[in-house]
Image (cartoon, rainbow, N blue to C red; front, side):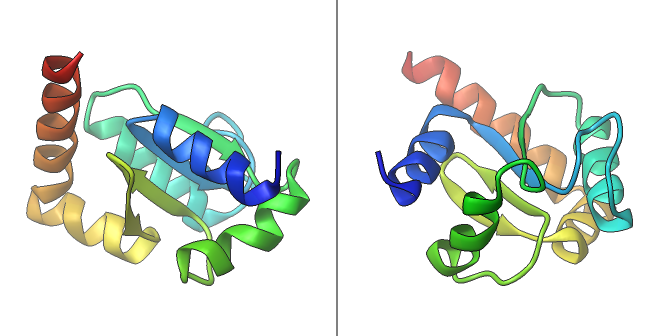
Length: 110
């Protein structure tokens, strides 16, 4: 399986997926820490990939996503964006709404 196929599978298999530096419990950068905190406030479980432990994903995902930085948040197979976008959506209340609606839709589809 190629790295791109692996990335596509991760995105497809996880309703809410964030690519971060470190883990949710021990993020290795401030942007990853903020993004994880924002997601945690929304109350749904999410998956994560530590790009520091996956250098091939760290190298290929920015090209695949056409998004150069980390963290990267994917919801329902769509790239949402990085820390600034996540924090703005949290402030506006649209992050929780998007997550709740996406999780509800995926549960209904199963």
